[in-house]
Length: 103
Image (cartoon, rainbow, N blue to C red; front, side):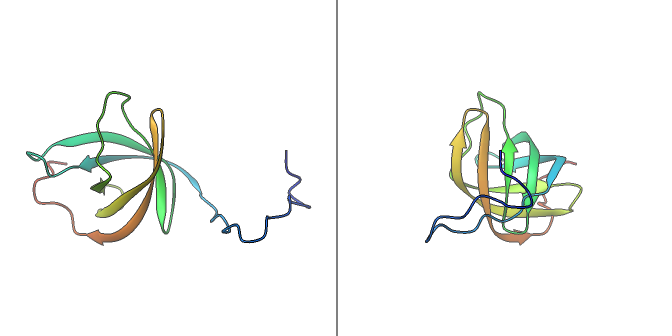
């Protein structure tokens, strides 16, 4: 475990990881395929991305809109990694609330 006073040294050339505040927000992955939505939970979120908990059986495309009602916006997302029922996404922009979203 890293000591907060003396954190582990970072490898040269390794990108610095951004602090990711933990959150517990509901959201919807909007795929654009027949207006389908997948309910997800945001586990952490920062200015440039988030970690999502998704249903294990869900098929989430590599690019999608993530609507977060608490934020009132839809984030354009690119999937950066996938592990079991979690995916990491990078935000590439925002859009207003999707017209097809019912919430």
